[in-house]
Length: 458
Image 1 (cartoon, rainbow, N blue to C red):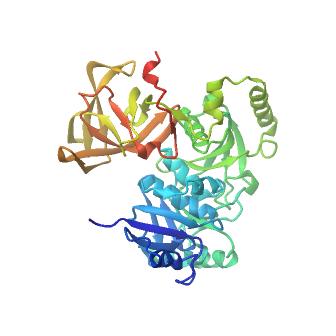
Image 2: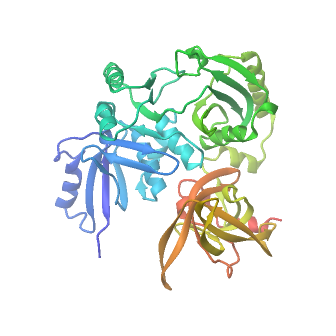
Image 3: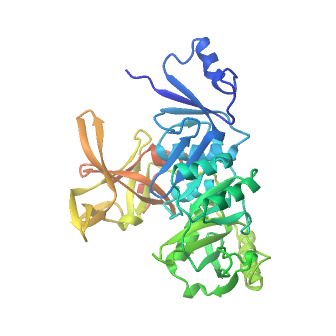
């Protein structure tokens, strides 16, 4: 039987015999440990990250190889680089790799733009493809990976457009990096645009929208960088963009924030640029409108008496989920499906019938039928047909042998919050529940109380 592979993570690269690097696992083996496993180690300072809505890749620049193939990860020494540790932990969580301790994620600052990106992707929200490369390696890695100019290079902790550059040549990149050796940068694709929206969100609801337009001599729309500001009525705003801002605030667990949304002038696609905690309430443009909006929310929040369930929902670090819960799959236009919570299962699965690959609008797509439910519980005998463009075929091992099944990625909405996960399509017609929620989605998102069940609620 093949031994599992364990990875030990440290902040800094040191001599191989030092116990805060390679010497740690050597000492474990010297005293008879790790006989059951293979092991390896790496330094957070050597890791680069590449993340988009479709994938996440972490590379060890010491070996120039992707970090993968590990069955378990232990963060041994990481406190001096908490943001990089948290980013790696988010990556592992997305890949379904167990790690200890969970506090690694909690310690990373959400001001770090790479961590924001991971949280937004985890919520299924559109982000601009982003890379994080240690500053001393940026020039070499841009050349090695053929990253195309122009691109955005900005301070991972930057605010108000500070240390934010449109890089158009290798010479300019070299000059900017040499002048900012102590700055942690992220690299983002340059999205052509004429403006962006700053949506002020209070209590997870959009309260004010400002359209910000750049001057001709800069790529920044920020008013602090000379951009012009125009107040947009909520009633005149695209509802999808308002929903996007509210979803971004929920993903970051920020009741008061400013969400920046960028719209590609070529494709008209919208992206969450960043989420700013407590942003521009008493400063910046249109404070005469913004201050009353914030003050109204503050007054309402202070004065209302929270009921027990409302208090649990808003104040608990993790929401409590019971044996059964109602979920929606907005990407498939499926609402209020009763799902069974199963901590014994790893992944999620959805009941589907007539699964086949077809061509639609010139594209190869996976087609399947999902029975329509009455009140989320009872099959009506009617079917709803769904189409997805992105899917994969996986092997499932069970007591019945090996089976091939289709798996898709989609957003699952629970208690009003979206989680992006993978669903295996299978025929669950003989079971009471059309959907099953496994550990991959439950991990770090919910506390399970087996005494509770939404199935029992009318």
